[in-house]
Every structure is written in C-alpha cells, then in structure tokens.
Length: 379
Image (cartoon, rainbow, N blue to C red; front, side):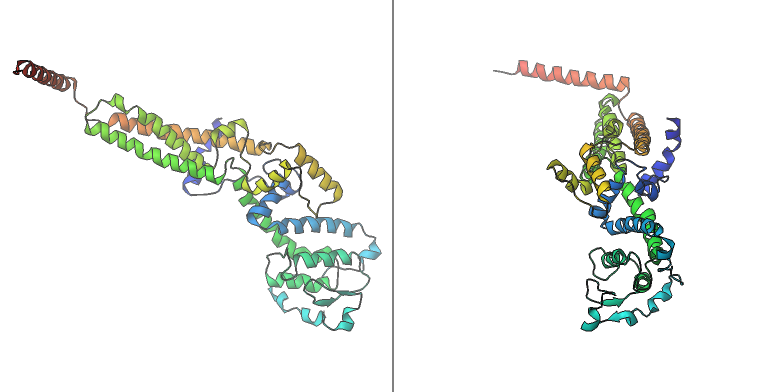
C-alpha cells in the first residue's frame, strides 16, 4: 500500500498531461507467447488489432513468419542450400532494384509452371526447385502485393526488396527487414495503444458520463457557497459541499483513468467495444476462425473462448495496476474534498452571536408588533 502512495505523483502528472496508462514491463513477445492473461492476452490483442486499430495483418504476418522459419530450419541441409539468404541488406536504395526485369506478361510465359502469378495478374520469374515456394508465394500475395486484402503498411522500398529477393530465394531472411519493422511497430505503437484501452474497465461512453456528472457537481459547490455566504447563513448549512466535492473528484479521477473503482476492487470489467462482436458470436454459439492458426491451436483457442468469463480480469499485472490506480483515485478524492471543505469552513461572513441575538430580537419584536396591530384593528 505504501508503494502505491509513493507512485501517486506519477499518476497525477499522467492524468493532467493526458498520458496513456501503460504497463511498461509488458513486451509484445510476452503477449504473443501466451504469458499474459485476459484482458491483455493474445486473443484480446488480436481482437483489438482487428476491430480497433485495424492492423491485424501485422500480427498475422509475424505469426506466419515464425511458423515459416521453423519449417525452413527443419529442412535437410541440401534443401536449405537451394535457397541461400539475400546477399544485400534492405535500404532506401532498394527502391531501385530491377524488379520489372523479372516481370513476364506474355501468354506463353504465363503457362510456365515456374512462374509466380499474384492476384494482380503480374507474373514474376522464380528460381525452380526451391523448398516451400508455394507457401512463400501465398504469403507474398497476402502481405506484399499492392491492393492485397492484408497488404502491410510499410515503405515501398521494403516491399520491393522482399518481392525482388523472393524471386531468387525462399529463405526466411528475405523478410528480415520487413519483419523487424513490423515487430518494432507492434511493440512500440500497437501494444502501447492496446494496453491503454485494455487497462480501462469501462467503455468510453461511461467515461463521458463520469465527466458530465463531475462537471455538473463541480458547479454546485461554488453555487452553494455563494448562497450561504450572501445570506450570512451559518456554516453548518454548507455540509453538502463535502459530499458534492467528494463525488465530483471521484468521478473526475475515474474518468481520467477510465477505471471504475468498484469494478477495480471486484476484478471485473465492461467488455470493450472491440470484443463485443466476438462476444455476441460466442453468445450465439459461434467462434470466429483464425486461418493462420494450426488446427490444434485453433481448437485450443475455441476451448479457451468457451470456458472463459469475458468480464473477469485474470492477469495479475492488470489486477495490481487496478489496485494501484484505485488507491490513487481515493487519495486524489480525499485531498480535493479536504481542500473544498477547508474553503467552505474558512470563507464565512456569518453573524457573531451578539449580532445574531440582536437580529433575532428585532425580528421577534417586529413579529409581535405586527400581531398587536392586527388585534387592535377595527372589525
């Protein structure tokens, strides 16, 4: 608990600088290798990339290349020798590689079984007799050809380097530069973006609701203070300011963090929007298929989906983060409430007891005078 208090200034700076919540110790490889659990598991990450960031092709390319490298490494040495690694590394000058020299456009050439024909009907000459040629060509069609459904968002010179060298070799190092770029983007951008959303246990609509109620309540405290001050009312009438300021600060901090304190303590969450489609399929008895997964892995994923509670927070790092942020929310709430209470008590112009007694006597005398006048008036 004391450690959570020590990190409160860091959270306070993050809230007012609009910085994203994060788990710095989590690396993308931990997510991909299954070392994390809901809500930051591999399946959660895939759904986020698919439905929120729309870059799921980056993850699928990484998973495919890892499987492809295993297959290539398992080949006999004489088969590997048919596909040596590229001699040159990728660079910005790769845009000048003579890829057009490998293009075949005639109908006669199109009948050659050693030619690769991608979806845009451009034909490229390839080296015959190389292992895993069919699988590699399929990956090129999927991830590297212009206008393909899952084309990677990388610089043209990176794509050109892959396309050119893939005509001469099926070695996994053909994809080395493109993969390094994609992997770095997954870890540096996509994962950070994903963690920011996954650490929130309420949806954006609830965050807006928190802000709206917080702002509404924030205007009530000075209004009540002004009314009691202008009417010279005793400070006891300002007690609602304590409750109003408490709720206003609590909702504001909850909105800034995207964290409902009650859900954080209970270890629950609202199902995020990027998982709702999958959850509804699950409720209807359907599970989406991931074609890049092996059949055994697909069955394992389906079994996990059927058994999991979509609303529970299982990862211990996320639980610790929730408890830490809950502590910070409560510290901020009590500090803000204390300041508002001090102002409500300290700012006053209520009458001193002697003046108040004189006013009460004057009011009593005025009331008696009015009663006497009414009794002596003619009928």
